Length: 190
Image 1: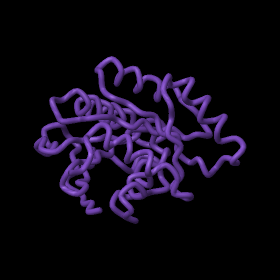
Image 2 (image 1 turned 30 degrees about the horizontal axis):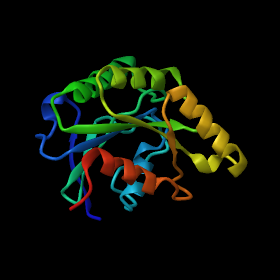
Image 3 (image 1 turned 180 degrees about the vertical axis):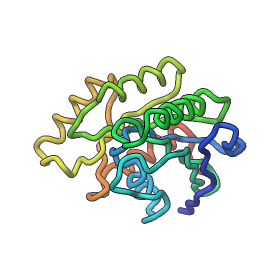
């Protein structure tokens, strides 16, 4: 699989021209979006990973096999940045999500130990109101014992109103399910 960074945009007028189907990843600042992206494309450092929440401060576009773009959206919630910066990120993300682009779906990442927070529910409602295909991904599954995982995923599915994909970077769980959903949104490779 060939994956490469294409562009980063901190403003809507800097988004790359729409040319390939896009699948976006959204979630709280500490949910592990960059680590998940790296795992999904089997690359260690495609997306920059940091222990400090809020390091992704722009929309980042990554090409996969020249057939689609994976889009890493800035996180919300725990980032230690001024309120004005958080408001700018929100405007950027909402502007991207409602722009006339070939967006096929959005994965909303949620820490399985924390469950859906008010911000996550708000995002899911926004996506639903704009008829954007959505799937919840329960990250950090390895932080729970195997016995608690099924109950946590079922609880998250109930709260979200849709089945959640369990994901663990450490155990490399969930990547196949993500690709199955991506293929469903974008279409299979020829």
